[in-house]
Amino acid sequence: MPAQSNKKDLKLNANIPVPVKTCLRLLLQAGFEAWLVGGCVRDFLMGRDPKDYDIATSARAEDMKNVFADYRVIETGLVYGTLTIISDGYDIEITTFRTESSYEDSRHPSSVTFVFSLSEDLLRRDFTMNALAMDIEGLVVDEVGGVNDILARKIRVVGEAQERFEEDPLRIMRALRFASELEFDIDIATLSAMKLMHSRLSDISSERIHTEFEKMLCASGVSRVMILGQEIIQNLFSAQEILRNYRYPSEDIAQKAWSLAARAVGSVRCDFSVRLGVLSLMADYFIECSDSSSVITSDIAEADKLRGALTINILSKLKCGRNVKKDVLSYADIFGVNLLGNDYYFRTLINRHGEKILVEFVGILKKLAEAELLPSRIVGDKPDTVRSALAMVDEIVARGDCCSLSCLAVNGEDIMNLGVPRGKVIAEVLARCLDRVLKNPGENRRDRLIEFAKSQIDMIKYR
Image (cartoon, rainbow, N blue to C red; front, top):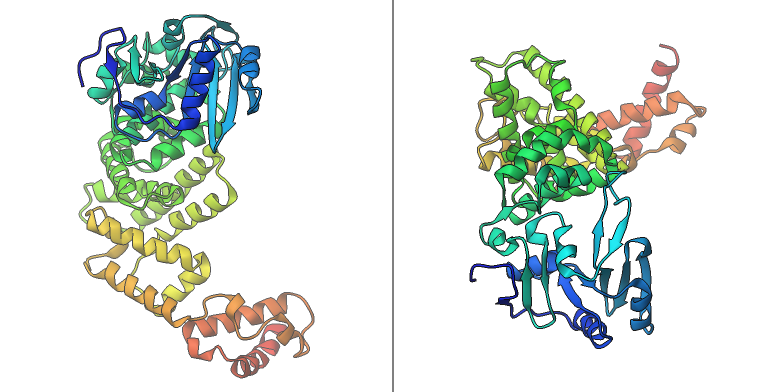
C-alpha cells in the first residue's frame, strides 16, 4: 500500500455490501455527499470484513428521512444528526457532517454544529485509524495520517491527546480495547496522556467501562495490553489500595505478579468469566515471585484473602451480571484448593461449585501448565497433578456420580414420610445422606438411604 498524503490518492477494491452501497448511491443521487467512515474503512484497509457500517453525509436528518422514505428508519440520535437505516439485515448508521463542542457529561458533546465539510467531520474523531473516509468507488480520504498509522500498527489520537481524552475519558478504554483486538501498539504521546488522564474514568458509567473492558479482555492481544496499561487497569479496580491492606509492599514483586497474571489471562479460553477469574491469580503469583524458599500456611491464607478481595472489587466496579459473578467467584474460590485429593474430595468440589465450573477449572489449570504459568502452590511438587485431577474429574462425570441433592435417590418428601416435620431436621438428614453418597456413590439407592436416614433422625432430634 503506498504512503498516504492528505488527499484522495488511494483506491481500495472494497467489497461493499449491496445494502450499504445502495444507501450511498441514494444519497449521491439526491445531490448529497456520502462517505463510508470510521471502523469499516479501517477494516477494509486491513483486509478484514467490517462488522458495522457508518456513513457520513452532507444531508441533514430531514433530508435523510426523505431519501429513505421507503426504508425502515430508526431515529438513533436526531439531535446529533444520526439515523439508522435497516436494510436486508444491516443496521447502517448515517450521520450528518458535524463538529462538536466540549463534553460536559464525559459522554455526549454539549452541542454539535452541522457542517458541509468532510474534513471538519473527520478531524473531530478519536483515533487516526478511525478518521478515514471512503467513497462508493473505494477512493480513500486521509486527513490525519491514519493510513500510515494502520500500516505501522499504531493507535494515535487525532489532534492533541490530552484534549481528546478530556472530551471523552472512555477513549482511554477504547484505545486499550483496540490495541488488544487489533494487536496494535499505542503511540507514546497517546499512552502518556492516557496514563495522565486515567483518573477521569471515574466519570464514566460502570456499564460503558464494562463493555470496553470485556472486549479488551476477550481479545487476542490482551496479555501485552494488560502490561502496557497496567496503571490504568489497576486504577479501575482500586487494586493499589487493596494491595496496601495485605503483606505485599514490594513494587517489584507486584510488577512481576501482574505480568504473570496478564500472561495467564491470555493463555486460557476466550471467555469473559474464565479470564476474569484467572486475573485473580495475581494473588498467587505474589507467592510465586516472592523471595521465600518455601510456601508457608500464612502465605496461602494471605493469597486467598487477597484473591477474594480483588475479585469482589472487580465484579463490583464492573457491575457484572449475576451469572458472571457466580462463575468468577467460584473460580476465585476454587483456585484456593490443591489438587492432591481423592475422588471424594473432587465430588465435594463438584457439589460446591458445580460440574461445569470444576471441569472448566481443571481445563484452565491444564492450559496454565502448558504455558508454564501454573502457580506451584496449587499442585505442590508433583508435575502430573493436573493430568491426574483432570482424569479423575472426567471419570466422575462419565460415571454420573451423584454430587448434589438434586440427583440424590431420596428427597424431602421421603424424609417427611418417616415422620419428620418440615424444617431444619429434614435439611440436615438430606445433607448427611448426600455426604454418605459423596463418599461412596454406590450408596445412592433409595432403600439404603431410607435406612440410613432412619438411623440419623433421632441422633439429630435429641443431640
